Image (cartoon, rainbow, N blue to C red; front, side, top):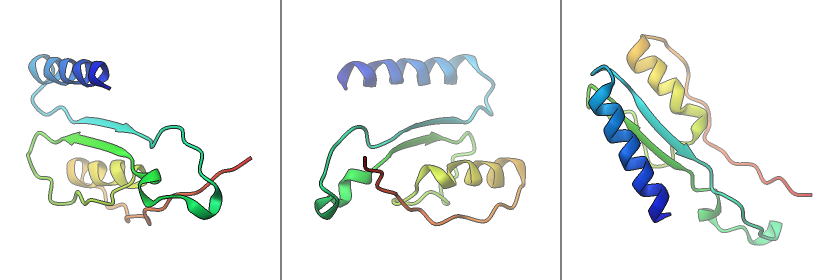
Length: 96
């Protein structure tokens, strides 16, 4: 994780320094691999990594339980004047 964090910091710094000032940066990751019996899945098992940089500095539409299903809806609404409805933030257990 330390190495990945270092790379991500370098990439974000490079993008902010070399790209246009209106560049939007989104870094997302899922909860990763983990096996839990269906009746004992901890709430944190579905936590997703979600980091965004908005050039206008307005993060008022971002909330703690935001899932990837709504990330681009927020971006398209805020920066491209679309009007997408927000979807329910949910997770699904897939088992073999």
